Image (cartoon, rainbow, N blue to C red):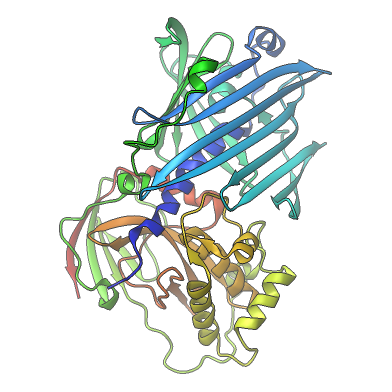
Length: 487
């Protein structure tokens, strides 16, 4: 039996929820349609200061403070988000600070984003220079510079719904927006629909609002906006909501009593228990509740047909591989990325300490997986997973294990990727992250459990870094699992 408690697996759930809030709060998007509402008129009538409480199924878990001003021909928005998230009985605090300057037409001029938690810090800042977005991301003492070409200068609004409001969407109108996320340096498309107007209570008054709903990776989020363009209410997945409140109410404390565990809430109860999962060579599970199956559910060790998923344990090469031939399309997974700094001198130095040049590729993977398992403390943290930061602090959950494992494998010349999905533990399936390493074929490995290959209860739903993991949002609360057979 596995000896590691299920509380290490909560991280993917909180990451997904956090990234949704991150996207909503940062709101970098580009649109081919210019706003039809007079922005200056909105600026003059919008309150200079707004407070919102964040709730999870009615329990306050955080607060948002936003200021809004117009000076020197720029719109300045400053926002702080403070949350306390209870996972497996552990309360984690996280603080997000964002400052941004917008041009009069609401296009982005510059921004600074900062996230701090108990152990980790992440910063992203940048500015638009003509048709380029110049970005610096990472920890304050280890920034990575990136330049992204822009077809259109990104827009920034209070949130994606504010963008729809400014664009003048008519009722029942649907429009796609592209959101740029500085923590992953990727663009994600989102569809926003203008619904019928509603009168809702806001701070003791009945207010006429425009209602917008967004299809975010298959997860529905809605927002209510008043006549000034200010968001007064939002609702999202896992019972999350945000409501405009007075300054006094916002400053009321956060009660951690009766708070709901994100992990348990998002986990999936199968029809029966699975005995000795680490010893199985095949598992068949019927998956229901999904309108559109994830694109990565089929392939390699997983076969998905007529809603039945068959997972077969991989076989490792019986003999030493020597030097493996890496196809061109696979060699891309040797390259570094902004948060997986496999080419950094510190990462290369650590990889050289773990493996020998003479080691067989399979031995390299085994040593690296074991080193991460042994040296990274399994402890819940809130952060934007960053391989260099994990190497420095040597603490984290499945996402921290996965990004560090990926970076070390790539530094050692082994193509590697991150997979996310579900894993079975103590009678339930929990959201989790692990790796695949290329050894003439992709082999599933898990540094949290020190498994190579990983057991067949690892159900891959998503493969990829950063924003690809947000695809999990469309599955949470919908998946139903029925174990058909195991052997």
